[in-house]
Length: 417
Image: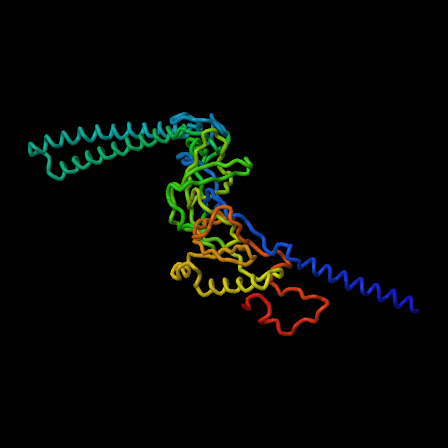
């Protein structure tokens, strides 16, 4: 029984000793309390992200102004065409018959005109000799004028029929490439209500455009001639460039989100880019060269006491935090309270937190340009606290000691400076 009690006592002491050792190891001052990153010098760019669709700068829908059956098609998808080139034909039988009918109408009108003119000339002569009365002469004159009008109308009908006959031959309106063909030989098109679409021809695919959708919160930063970079899924890892050509003031609303369209001009000399491709766009809104920058996390960092800090370091940290909050750092009060300024933190030689007031500039989403007195390239700036070492949460107490019920005023929770 005595041996059993001794064994239990030894095991209990070993457990307590191990726990204390783990506690000391976890809170050893050798473990770094904060994560740091170096201030870097280089180029930084601020961009606005958007998506859009590639398309030709100019596209023309080719239709027909007359109805009929398509008798021939001379081009297909991807065919290159020249302006004035014959690309399709509609059966001209009906239009040819209309021309012949109009020609007959002109002949009838001309015959009537000749007859009425003879009657008019005879009645005029007799009227001048006082043989024909005024009403008889006026009737002959009216018939002659009506015959002239009918002859003019018949000629117009003939010209219209000939024009419709010419419409049975479809010609390319521009130089370009056929990107869409909607009809086949044998199909009948009806142009009574609207011109049916036969082809879509894109002009010069060596120059294209992106219609990029930009959120209303970012559209104020987009200006003409801004540089643009974009990528497409067809060529992963490859970046293409362009420039903003126009910002359209017409807005669209989708799911209560207001968007605007930025037109981006894109060169396509090698023909890699195709109409309809989805482009992931970055519009360059600002850039800075040879600038100092820090990770964005450094600007979000809020100071807290580290468990391994010495008493003097903690006092200096508390003092620095109070000074920043009160606007009494070595910088001028006016500059400190400037809404464009932020605070960076670093550790001095005594392991105490020291602030650096900086102006935050351009951001690329990862790093931000900063300027300020005392800021140097390579300087180690705090970006965060290591888990379990900084007093962003109450420090773990020694398991061998009773916890104090009054932590405030003796290294209590963060913020009780």
